[in-house]
Image (tube, rainbow, N blue to C red; front, side, top):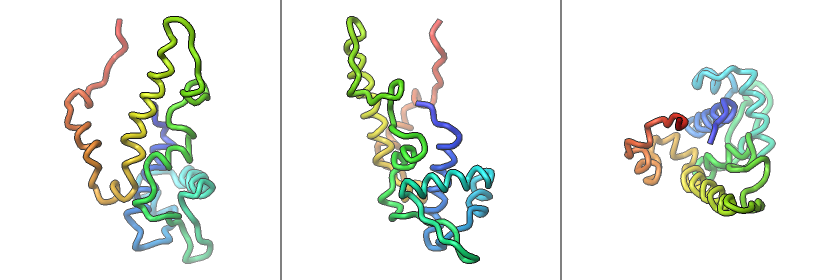
Length: 156
């Protein structure tokens, strides 16, 4: 799975809003500064998150951004889908709709399993988890595996 800079920024901005829930609404400039995100890029991202129902905005001198739901009701998967669409697609198609022939016939099940693995982490990790610095057990267990930290090069 490749995570674009835009998606990374979106998750970071949403986590920052979750951490600042007592101070809502929060100006985009404050979020941008806290997370090192270019303000103009962040405003575009916040607009997409607003359209997806992840954030709300308030106008005026006391305005800014806030989460549209409680942080414990917004998963990382929700934010990713708002920016990039489905978690796992193959050439723009949902894995369960694909059909392969011959030796590749079982590949659909592999893509569905990949999506299920992503969901197991991303749908069960909320913005509240990030803001509190308390990740779900499945995330903690996965990161304790030393192999998880190793980047694999393409095989020769």
